Length: 201
Image (tube, rainbow, N blue to C red; front, side, top):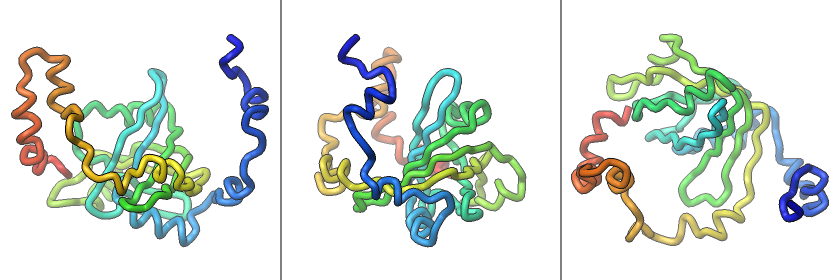
């Protein structure tokens, strides 16, 4: 099919060479500024890959979403969720991961590419105690590279300045009801925040 790019040569013919600064900004260890950014972020998108395909999962916390263990290693607690454990299933079979750290109101993001493993050492798991609760495991990420992503995507989308756009957007319960006949979507959505409080950590 002539209108589908099939190889790198075809891509490079369309896009040319990378902007020099997009290469110069890459680091292989956390510098003081990259460390400062990551220690400020409470929200990260975790992308993994496995035999069934890819997965991307949001991870958030009330403080720094990861703990920096060294200039190449970060620890991400796996707090209570729905037990699908898609990210963990992928990591134990294919350790390649990418992380995108976001900070509300900031149009840049920081990206990490590297490898991960699922750690259950008690001294690590217990060190993340929140409200008397512990994660069941911790994702240990070893970075290969880090770099900031310029702000064009957030400027285009006006993500932080466009206000509340939730009107008319399907709610979580409605997604379930679409697949499960008779599901009480209104109760699920109305009371979800209250129900989730005991399972936040």
